Length: 399
Image 1 (tube, rainbow, N blue to C red):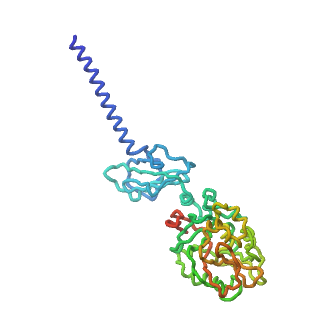
Image 2 (tube, helix red, strand yellow; image 1 turned 135 degrees about the horizontal axis):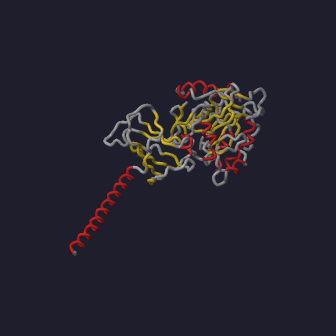
Image 3 (cartoon, rainbow, N blue to C red; image 1 turned 45 degrees about the vertical axis):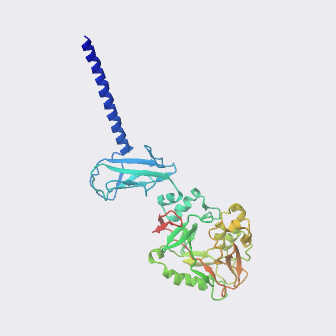
């Protein structure tokens, strides 16, 4: 009887040991499985770019802010896929469709590895303004205009609600003609000369075309016949490479004049688009390459500690007294005098330029030599296809 009781106890002990070992193996297997992938997508995904070999099982591992999780961020959470860090095994690639909020797996270069399972590791990061622009399925101008409120570097407070970049060094850099340019903003109702008005990007060359050039070889202030205008739209335009020339379209440039530089930025904006000019001068010019307006310069300021509203309450002719205004304005070029497109309405030879933070009028356009920074409106169908807008990684463009 003692032996039987001993055996009965031994059986219970053996069962407990076996059960414990099984649980350990089960937990170990579960751990290894989840370490391989947080969840399995059982072929409920979009496949693009043609036919492919059967990839077998597909697994996803998801990281948010560098931490593994089993929850994909929701569509309006402010996160997006980090395409540079995300990858798949077996030659597959992963991207993200922000519209449908789903993964797109490309198997065009798939080849079966030692394991038939394909693992896609997806890293989600907080969405930047550049991420928003790159994910935007629209023209570059519309993407910036429609998402302007998401960026602290863009304002829409001019009389027409155009979206303008502000500050000392905003992320508005763009690669154009294999040169560094900057986006002034997205402007509404830009006429291409055929009465077709669209929202288009206005950009300016980061470096001057010429650091010392006359506005006009004569003393007249008629941009339609100015020697600088002719040189920019012939010699310089012809030097722009063909892929980029196709991105430029004719634009109607307003040539309204001002009688004084002692005007607020908003007043200059209205005058530039007005019809008050010196007798006989045109009020418009249709062409491809021009210069910035004084109002472009004024509206590019963020204001620093003084504040943008205060800066815009000072007339641009006195800005040299307010360093917070011009040093926090990316269109200000320290130590450089630059021509603008706007002219004097009271002087037959008066041209406006920027120097020392303020705007001034000179009547010596034929023997005064300042820097010329070409400016132009891109075609309405240009798209932003890469980059993040920084100086080191400017936006890239395509048609």
